[in-house]
Image (cartoon, rainbow, N blue to C red):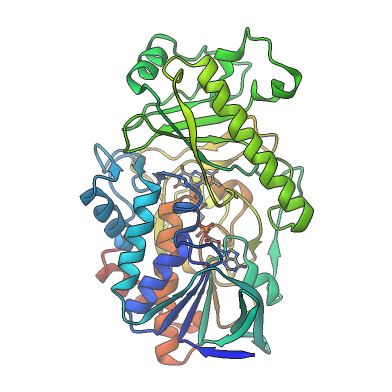
Length: 447
Ligand SMILES: Cc1cc2nc3c(=O)[nH]c(=O)nc-3n(C[C@H](O)[C@H](O)[C@H](O)COP(=O)(O)OP(=O)(O)OC[C@H]3O[C@@H](n4cnc5c(N)ncnc54)[C@H](O)[C@@H]3O)c2cc1C
């Protein structure tokens, strides 16, 4: 088998992973990203999210560091919409320009290499320590050894393969998946005017998401509940009536991203037939929803589905059992952890498994929860740090901790921690937390 070596391997070059890689490389570690997509960024780019939420606690900015550098690079290219960064919870960006920005940032780091279109298939372990990965490019297998592996796969694939403990909710309880897309040719002025003159009917029998009519610096609207109320739909489209559908404008004229529930009561970690069903069903939902917007929302008359994301949006899958599990109580108390590596302030909660609505727990403006380093360390395993949506937390904390700025903050902390551990020849669990925190602060991170 082909052999390779790095100080730090980043397993998954997605939202958390690219930042982890930049941080590790900038802190002196020879770093390698393994990414199975054909671009960097994961949900941030290929997932076509387009709306960063979680940079602010509605009074001030709570995430900076490398994520903030990306924000500024996007802004310089006119690929970002934000009015007041201190108070806006939603920063809208162009997902395609973001791919190029990430490539350019990565290319500037002499310590950083990238293997795209390459899948992690197994781990190399020695006792309780992860010491490398087996990866597949085309039909060629390669064993790559490293001092530290950072699992940024979103699904905790390295942790699972290495036998680290994890949890995943049953299908009946898990959040739905969503394939994102873009609709172009929208007359946004007309759409805004329509929603201004037809605000959602406040009916307390309907799920709260329908009542959460919000205008962000761009534009965001939930669902088609009122529009479809008196419409007779063919049986195969009945499901649209109560489904959560969110559209958000982008920095480009006449373009919105669309986010509607897709594969429900399904595990993203299942392969083969199940995976294919999830993908094609989500694609059908996206098309049905965009056709419904076209037919029933003024301003969408000449619109068309112009892009479908290349990466299915997974809200929830495996979460590791870490040295510490962040609880809903921690969120509600806006807990200040001693080993804080970042902050989150978006409402906790989750989308309901039926795809209809979401439940939320809010923090007051100005308050945020800290994210402890320990939730990124899988219990009983050495040589492995986890960052992104698969760290250790109670399921209802999800909608706060899995937001992209929070995943990026975790990625940055994991990268710095891995570089320190590699340099000192110690386990990530044994690094000096004060040194980690000082290094992060020196790099403009907010803890
Ligand atoms: C529908 C939806 C809407 C959302 N809306 C928002 C929003 O509006 N604002 C917000 O801030 N957040 C939002 N989120 C949350 C946020 O996008 C994600 O939680 C976050 O991007 C996850 O980051 P991550 O790094 O953990 O995973 P990802 O960004 O998914 O990165 C994981 C990477 O690992 C790679 N990978 C996985 N397995 C392997 C393997 N075996 N081999 C090699 N590579 C592998 C993947 O290809 C991927 O690139 C949304 C999420 C979804 C699904």
